[in-house]
Image (cartoon, rainbow, N blue to C red; front, top):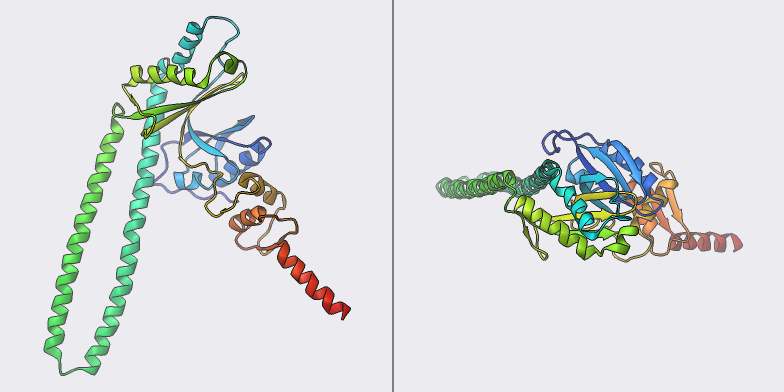
Length: 341
C-alpha cells in the first residue's frame, strides 16, 4: 500500500472526520491502512471501530480493504448514564445529542452532500469520456477510408465533395446534440448544488445498535424513535424508512455514543470479484498482508479452499503470481513422476 496524492477538485474541505467498523482483531490493520492509503491523521481506535481524518474522496475511501463499513462521523462522546434515572431523563439525554449542537449536524450534512456531488460529477465525466474516445477512433477510420477512396477514385471528386458535406452536416448535428446533453448535465449538477444548500427537504431513517447496559433498558426501535422525532423537530426532515436520502447510524454502548452517516449502501467488505462466500474478505486481506508480499513474488496457498486469500493478494499486489493448490499438486505430480521414471 502506498499513500496516493489527493486531487484538488474532489476533496472534502479541510479534511473530514470518518470512522470505519472492523472485525475483532483487525483494528490495527485498519489503522495502518488508513494511514498508508489515505494519508489519514488523528487516527485512533476502540474495539470494533477506527476513527480518522482525511481529505480523500469517495473513490479512495472505497478502496479500504480491512474495513467493514465506512461512516462520516457526526458525534462521538461518552456513554449515556443509564444506571440511575427514569426513562424520560435518559430519553432527554439522547435528544441532547442532536439539540445541544445542531451546527455539527448541519456541517456533517454539507460535507456528505459535497462528497456525493463530487462522486456524481466524476461519474458523469467518465460517461462523457467514453463516447469521445469512440468518436476519435471512428474519425480515424473515416479519414483513412477517405484517403484511400481519393487515391482509387480521383475521377469522382464531385461525389466525394457531396459526401464530405454530408459528413460535416452530420458532425455538426451530432455536436449540437452533445452540446445539448452537456447543458442538461450542467443543469442537473446546478440543481444538486442548490439542493445542497438547503437541508429541510431531506428524507431520513435511523438505524440503531445498542449494546451493554443500555441494551437491557431500551430496544433499538425505541432509541430510533426518540432520535427520529428529535431530528424531525430540530431540522424539519421527513422520515422515510424505505427509500431515504439519508441514513443516520447510532451506536450506544457502555464505552461510547457514536453517531454517523453511512457513506455507501453496500459494505466495503463486499467484494465484486468474490463470487462465492468463503473466508471473510477482510480477514483474507489481513492474512495476505502478514505475508509481506513483494512485487514479482510467487504466492502459494496449498490449503486455499475457495482461494479468497489468493484473490485478495492478486487484487492488492497485481505484480505477484498467485498459485492455487491444484497448480501446485499438478506441478509436484509431474516432476515426481518424471524423476521416478
